[in-house]
Structures are given as C-alpha cells and as structure tokens.
Length: 274
Image (cartoon, rainbow, N blue to C red; front, side, top):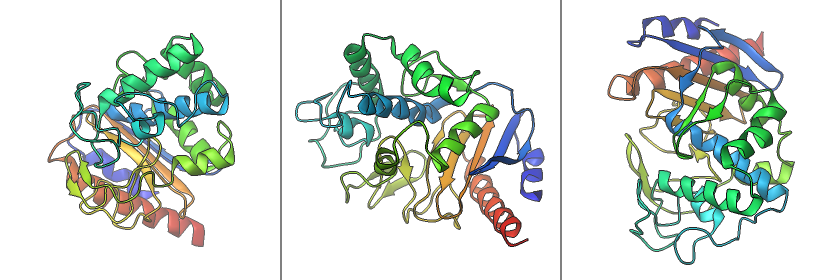
C-alpha cells in the first residue's frame, strides 16, 4: 500500500505503522517490534481492562467513582467534571466533556481496589495476555503511562474490529456515544460541539478539524497521544490504522496525519475493489 511510503518523509526519527483488517495486518512500515511511549493511546488499553472488570462483575459502569454523583461510565467518557491533570472538580457531572487523564488514574485505582490486583498486572492479564501483546506494559499513570509496539497494537485493533476480549454488546457500548450532546475540547484541535466520546474511545462523529482523515466515517473511534502516536478503527471501512512515532505531537502533525489517513482509506478501498 503506497500510503505507508509517506511515513519515510515525516519529520521524526523513528516511525512504525500498520494497516489492519478483521483478519489482521494487511500492510506495515518500519519495525513492528520497536517499543514507543504511547502517551494517551494508553487510555483505550486501560478502558478495555476496566470493561473486562465490568464483564467479570468486579465493578459496574454505574458504580460511584471520582467526584460526587460520578460513575465509572462518566470517568471513561470524560464526563465526570474532573480537571485534566488533577482531582479538582471543575464542572458538574455530565455537563461538559472535560478531557481528564486524572480520571483514568481514578479508574485504575477503582478496579485495583475492587479486584485486589495491581492495575498494571490486571491490564496485562485482562487484555495483553489474551491478545498476545507481549511488549505492552503500563509503567506510569493510567492516563498516559504505557509503552507498546505496532505489532501489539495491531492485535488490539484487530480485536476492536472483531471483539473477543469483550462481549459483543459491551464492545458496541464502548464505541457508542455516552452522555450525548456534551461539548468540549479535543486536545490540540479546539472546541467541538458536540465532543462525542464512548467508553474510553474518542468517536469521530463530524468533528472538524480532527486528527483522523476527512474520509473516515463518523463511526470511527480511537485515540491519539502527545507522544506522536495514534490508533483509529473505522467500522464502516472494516479497517484500522496504528502509527507510533518518537516526536511529540505538534503543528507538524496536524496536516500530515489527516492527509496520511485519507491516503490510507483510499488504499484500503482500492484493495477492497480489486
């Protein structure tokens, strides 16, 4: 797929990528085993572990967690009112979409308390081991402290296209809009009205500007990270894309990411037609 060749021109020292279908990797670039810092691409992994805990009935989406009146579902969908990096409450529950890394730390603590298992261990056992993600580990805060490689995240993305870790119903809920109609900021891309989010996954909807491609369907879900990383899954395209770099997100990334993702979509569509 020629779209991946563009990565060789990106202003980064190292980059690895994969395009994924329901059957696994269909093309890749760079070293798929090279480990990168994920930054906020950590959040979907953590969310998936929390949802496994929901499946196991260790916790419930309606369990109180975080600020008064907030639940696990509010924390997963950035609707709890918690500040970005602190436990300060800066809005009433379910009134704004306030992107909160601190909220994911609360989620990890909640699951750890409910299971009596260190959360990094729980994440490994609940998500990484079943999917064969041997290079993925949580070494820092649950909002942004994981490391992984493209090979591992390709397995994760494949499972998001064809769920095995979660039941079909809960997997569908995870990528459906939670607390619809909430406005909020997508970091680096400004205020979005509304700023749709699922249970740990950002949902593209009709946001503009956005880090995914202009051709990604509104149902596309995923996450990007300050470390220059992203992963999106487009259910209508039945494909996903993972890109990991070692250059922090910034002005360099905005035009490149969107153009690249549109080229990936064109390639996937061409492959489907051929």
